[in-house]
Image (cartoon, rainbow, N blue to C red; front, side, top):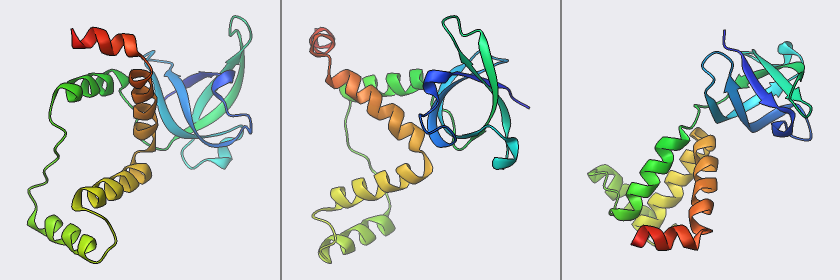
Length: 158
């Protein structure tokens, strides 16, 4: 059974429920962000794992909570590397699927979408939001970092 640690500042104001949480694996010391459900009572979760919520100036006061990981942890270093590589490469995604092309073209011709690329983007983002919300949230934060730093952009062009 895994044991996790988080700072009180990462626990949402409304306390229990589903949230994106920054936690540390007590054994491996790995820090990651993941979508999780948290509760003070283990009976409120389907697969509760111990979660120490620490607080105080030295984080030396801990309260026992429980966490249930909802989706996979996001490897932020990998995501950052891929985003950097993508800035230098093509943004074309090709599924090489006649079936998908037919279905997307149908949706466009039936006036559900303006283009096949718009349909593909919207449908993929909807599916990603359902299946991998932590990945979208981590990428959104990363993208905001890159968009907000004109100095980094200037230096990367050199």
